[in-house]
Length: 166
Image (cartoon, rainbow, N blue to C red):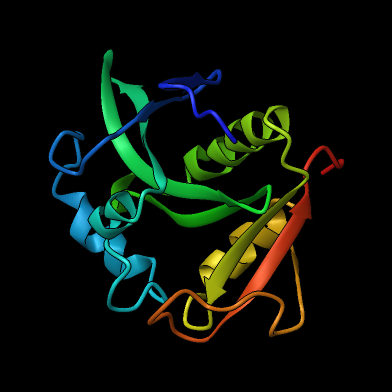
């Protein structure tokens, strides 16, 4: 069983566990981010990932000296694989590297807990996400490798061996 700590830190960001969307410091950016995850299709709201029991973290960075939530992620472990189910950064905070800094933090924690493979399903409608995951060393798999989550749009499963060089 993977134990997700309440806080993970890197040089540029802090991940803070969120137990509910109401308890998290999600600003007005969340609705736009949910649309941007598209492929996320109907049924991929962050609150639904929390309700499904996924681990959820807020991405927090210091802005003007105060911590600010700039994104969120959801994940779970299936058959020892780390499975990314949601990752988005607020539109105004994109392209600062926060998403890319988040992935290795989570991957290291998952590897410590025994995961050897990370996977993500990238919606067919989200070319930016496809490029994001490719840059992080994920590779696309042939369709049919794993079933799509209920109600998900067509997409591509991408995988990366944990502990492998980037």
